[in-house]
Length: 462
Ligand code: PXG
Image 1: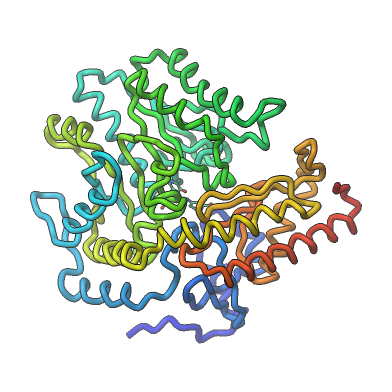
Image 2: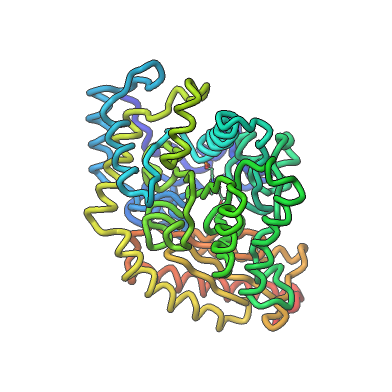
């Protein structure tokens, strides 16, 4: 049996990593010069690295480990499923119990008439599915020209050609291009872009860009709008309250399909099962991944409403699918994850315990001289670092303040990410108040050290 526990000194592992392993979204030479931090174990909200340091994972891996690390039941279910039926496909008029049971369970949990699931291996794949689904939908409806999808700048929908093109991240478009038929509107980021408007005014103004874009493109050419209920990778941008109701009104008025990308916001992250419930969105399609299996197995999918599923069915064969669509081991593990979320009342824990406690401690971070605003929905939060709170000013790019703060967090054994000058967290949903205290204590220490470092380098703050 191959046993992959740590058996080499960290430096040797780092050298092998640099020699053979190409990392996602990484400057390879920069990483090779300093060496990757190597994680060896996980339990609950805690990671252990190859030097034996205990790290509080404030990001739940990559926003995915909702039930926390190291649950034995998950391993047992995977092992049992591998012995029973390690793989079979769902392509040619066959099915299997894990895919059937998981699809039925997701249909039960999802709101409204979102009753049908098309499985994928990841969030990116699921969004590629969505692009093809909505275009196919309008073909079957006899309007094949209705094929443009509208998305947002600084949205994130994955890194495949479809996902990367739907996303509004220009550095991604710059590496490999962007496919045709996708248009972008501005994001509802009040702190950074709201100018003199109130949050409510700004939310409406940004939503109305959707209507302007639809009119510019011609309403009969637009297939769908896609958005994350809360932008995650873009910096935990929680939209003003006025935003989603207006987006919903516009989609309804022009008969445009609405896709809620719930890859991060799904499965309890916002204090409800889905972010769409938190924000009152009624999507035709939801993208899911990450928290669906808490990252124990790679699996994603599209939850599709009755009318869209019926239309796709009417069109006969839909030429689309992945070898691993509904993979039995991944599906069995996801089902066990949903059982744990439900039976252990983890969504309720977020809503009634962890969010209220973290909210009070998170909001208090605005007392720190570096912190302009603190935002939190469920267990998804961000703070804006600023040299001048009253003006909502930005640091210069050279100050590299987000990176500096992140480095301090990393050194203090807290995983908190930086997106530009916003620091973000999304801890496992099982985090306890005592662990929240540790998170805040390490965050404050890191902010203090970052502040001292900026002053020492003569960068003006406050
Ligand atoms: N949609 C959303 C909203 C996501 O957050 C994807 C789709 C793509 O999922 P896959 O499983 O293909 O990665 C994501 C993924 C970051 C970061 O830096 C965020 C994601 C992935 C990697 C890094 O915050 N989100």
